[in-house]
Length: 329
Image 1 (cartoon, rainbow, N blue to C red):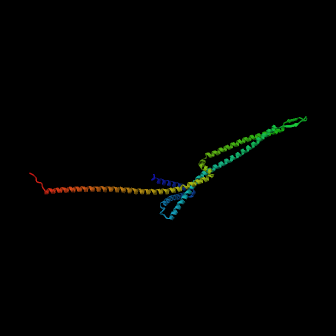
Image 2 (tube, rainbow, N blue to C red):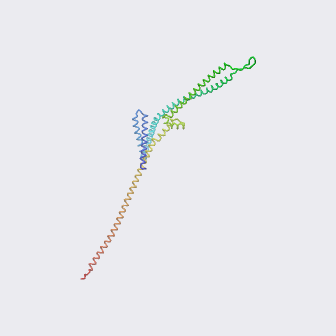
Image 3 (cartoon, helix red, strand yellow):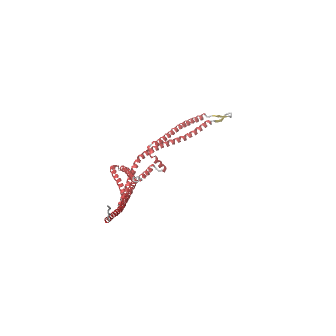
């Protein structure tokens, strides 16, 4: 796995750098839409050059001069800033459509909320007037009950009677008041129904809208930290671009370092293998030499025995010549 890991890091860095370059080039082309093709070509070449420069700086850091080193580091940093700016422009442009839909929804909600507040105010006024009419009805009813006139006749008797004119006036006022109260009941019900319909429209607009689902988490965070949705989105985009292109460059440098480490490990491994091979050859040669020496020693012993046997035979022949044996007949 450790031999494959450098290739994985390199693939991740190139994929991340390619994605960053695509969004950056797309964002810059939107910014300079009059010459979009030229901007795409220029930005693409700069992106590739940035990666090559970062690799060159890592590999030749100790060999290049201070002036060249300073310029190349500055160039890589500026190119990273340009890439981040292009990505920022792309993401902001993508958010604008959602922002317009969100503002449209908020405007519609504001209108509905304003209507709801007006209906609620009217309903409160109606309730106040209705309470006043109920008090008047109570007073008029009590007035009808107390519509008694007392006077003393010529005979000195106290006479109690009712005033027809007063009764007619009170009854007329009571009827008008009751009619007005009934109308207010109808109006209150109508306003309550209007408020309920507006609540349903607002709830439907908030729940069935796609933009509400899209910005729901960000809107929740904005409410929790008491900031606007635009501010939260801007912070999120800044954090996003902070780890996008810089991470791609850092991964590329890390891949270069891993490949360098791998090369050293392979070189050391080859040296170790050669050393082991040489040791095997030396052991084999030593074994052969030992066997040869053993064989030489054996040959020497054999030659000595042969020489001794030859001398013995020679001596035997000499003795037989000097002292021949006589045969008996």
